[in-house]
Length: 304
Image (cartoon, rainbow, N blue to C red; front, side, top):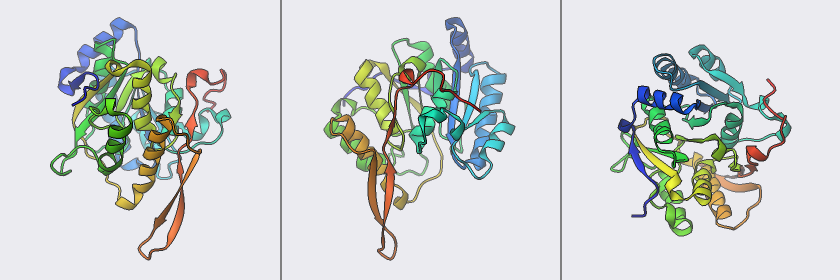
């Protein structure tokens, strides 16, 4: 199998030792959690990160929740648990409207302050410090590593228990045909990853579901395979989307992969889906891109 940079286990890294390395290097670290309607899970994630990785061990300097137009009180729950919460619409308003997961990633990168930035999804039900120590560990221990991608097992997810349906049916075949040098990436669509700010701010960010694949492709294109680390985060439990909600995600992944293989696409992709009565309806899939933050006009910053 193709190698894809060094592979680690979260067991390789201990929070107190990493905090000491961070202090010695004069670095700061942010945990970012883009969230839309995650009130049921966001409080526990923030509380554990604050209690274990800010108060008990000073590994994190910031826990930031990017509230992406939630209507269920996600922001209030996260604030009560100890996060700094910013609303998506208040970040870089001069950039114009955007939508999708990648837009939230881009805005959380802008709003955060750490030299090292880690992201986890807001729907994890078995979150623990291992997610953060695993992602930040390689960056604090190995200077050559620029970006770290997590992988994990899903309890009850079948024999592999790893990559989801879009990974196995769309992302992995696309990688095999278009980016074979990335065939060793265990879970290219995992939402848990971390990187060095100067590397991340130099990259464009896909607004929609294509962001997770695009970051891997772009980091390796610029810095080579040794710059990409992978870490086994153990198990991960989260909500599972029904099949009819995965077609737009698959379209976003397909469009992102084709664009990065040199086949330009429009900034909007339209997909026709059919309901149980075989009635078709068109869905617009977000596939636009935000510019690198390093090239963004200075002074257009968080305003609220």
